[in-house]
Amino acid sequence: GGRELVVSFGEMLIDFVPTVAGVSLAEAPAFLKAPGGAPANVAIAVSRLGGGAAFVGKLGDDEFGRMLAAILRDNGVDDGGVVFDAGARTALAFVTLRADGEREFMFYRNPSADMLLTAAELNVELIKRAAVFHYGSISLIAEPCRSAHLRAMEIAKEAGALLSYDPNLREALWPSREEARTKILSIWDQADIVKVSEVELEFLTGINSVEDDVVMKLWRPTMKLLLVTLGDQGCKYYARDFRGAVPSFKVQQVDTTGAGDAFVGALLRKIVQDPSSLQDQKKLEEAIKFANACGAITTTKKGAIPSLPTETEVLQLIAK
Ligand code: ADP
Image (cartoon, rainbow, N blue to C red; front, side):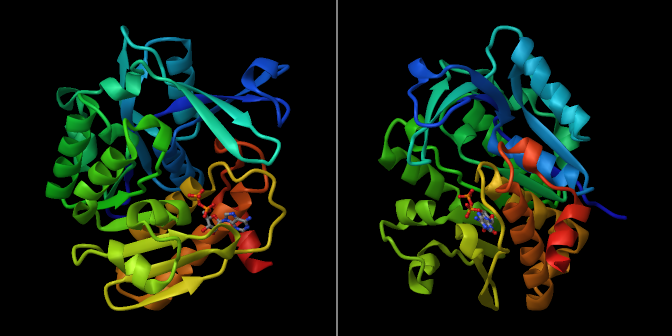
């Protein structure tokens, strides 16, 4: 009951991934089409777990854009915030899997549809229904989407939503490292919940350590929860009155794509079900455990969206 909608704002795109690892794009024998985009993944993660979710963003009015909107709907995500632009192309990314397992991205964005959403095109009524309004950073890079993003945050906050931010750094998309750092930190005190990876922690603080004193450089008195995800080690959390760490689950890792988004989606699902989790250490640790399990399962299959689990699958891993 009550207000449980998670509204996720930002980009949705298609990754083209070579069918074999360790080759350059030109040498790839064939590509697999993998829909994604962190904010879209988060919305689908919430929905797959049985929660209410909506996505707000712009797609090209092309074959790829229509495919992505259908994926949202097929996964039970409200697409009432999706705007189609006849003059724009849906974002595409070509992903190289290097032999060492690391990923390299080459983006088609000159500019892509997601960067062209304007403030006037926002579905204000939908955003006002959010219990949590979630977003990343790619939509903050350039106008007009930057203004749309900042306006949507304002609308959500005024309507009483919690704001959730995963900076989800994609360095290659920013004009410079300095601009990325400045723009990301310029809205740092506007989120209630912030999740960073170890890489982002180092990028933002300049220090390669996950010790509490380093993480606390990113803490703001306006925050309710700051999370640092640590891959198979689980995560560290910092709330107003308490902090701690929650280990993850042992799984056979195949592909980590989408693990962070699955983690965020699961955590937000738990928080909208019981917002008092943010003030109660025991409840918060239960919610983070659930999120760790959701992230862990997502690493056991290829791709992001196809590997996002249902609530039953998450509970089964926790009960094991
Ligand atoms: P990101 O994808 O944002 O870099 P992580 O890789 O840290 O985030 O993964 C997010 C969460 O998913 C982790 O906090 C953890 O709970 C879970 N997770 C990721 N990789 C593994 C793994 N190999 N084994 C178990 N859990 C994992």
